[in-house]
Image (cartoon, rainbow, N blue to C red; front, side):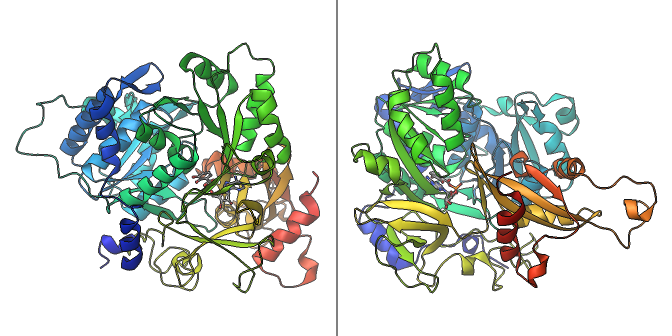
Length: 587
Ligand code: J2J
């Protein structure tokens, strides 16, 4: 058997010692962020979300109450809990309450659906799944009912809001019932000791380039290092008001410096339940928001709406843009059109975060993705052979540092780990814990970048098999895998095509199955009356299959063969490149 500890790859002891000696890692946990702030200025406004307004004291008290209730429910230190909540007070309170118990939150995004949730729960052996009731027309209780039937380890479903009829009949808990008041808990069942700095605090999600999602263990000490170093590079202090508009479970609005940075600074966090310009602009005006963050397509939509808005946006000092390439055109528009300073953010859930600094020359802010937030971040740009290239030459970006992981979470055997080569810890030659890291511990980002002589990085491309759809990351392997599971599909290839608004969107080439079909698998050639497979059938199938909406191909092309098949036996990677260049380009 695997021990719990070994499932979370750690830094070598000499690095850990050095990071501690330099003060980069401290004897401090994410729980201390709230309690320290509450003790220092408990009556300051901490959180505004929907109708909720909480001071630091009130937020800390609600977190304590929820921790007690979750503990009474049976959630224990080291348990994995999948948290699937949209922006709102419940997300913040649940995250901190789980931290207090030493339980490990797995942070799903609101757009995730059955496929992703089953993977997260399955790989981690999650004991609880915490969901919203409904959000943007989607009923998470129905999803919870569906997945819990297939997941024997999952003991509890907890609903933020109304469990409803479905939830009631499944014995779902109501999150609102789990907030104990002081004195409710009995001495018979005391809360565990709080976590320590070297404990794993949460699992972030990797953007994904394989068929299976990779989970990223983040410890209190390394996440806090990212937060402190980010705060040094960003204009966030106790007077700031940070607006979380993107889903805040994502690493960018979470710790770059994000809502956790804002709490650390003693600032106010405002959460938008959706990022639409009307909602966001109304909050900027009413809460006097000073800083917020967006992916490029969202920033574009805000700029378009700002021209004619009746809202007063004058409090906004900084707009952070990151997650995908911010074109120079967009970059140039932020200053004049929003009267705010642009900060480009180039980060990854695995660790390294780069920022342009507010006092950088205009050219740096507009044309680069900035530089690492920590002096202890190590950057290497190498050629295909792994040898360093001269500054100013594009190459593969490798990084190592005090908050960049040394390995992905390793599922226990039986959780899908053994024998699956794309699962970390499987030990096979395609195990990401071998391929995504160099022997000396550098993380291979999969990004192509230039390191300029002034120390700033410019992202110029990518070698990883990943599609970046306006900041949302898609693994072609994963979508192809789902397509190939369709009985009427013979082969499929998913590629990125350029898009003005999103940067990239997805196109799936699909070859229907024509031979060896059973009576239920129709095709025109077989003359059995079943309609041929159309693009709509393909997207409808994927949606029903429970794939996150952003992974559903924007474009489906039904083809007889891949148009590049003539060039002989090629790899899937070569096939995708050739397809991206041939048929889809320009459409
Ligand atoms: C080009 N590509 C970028 C940028 C990320 C802060 C900000 C973003 C993320 C994030 C994050 C980019 N220009 N400005 O976690 O803390 C692409 C790169 C990178 C990948 C990481 C944070 N900013 N990217 O986007 O884990 O390809 O994190 O390797 O989702 O997004 O994706 P993700």
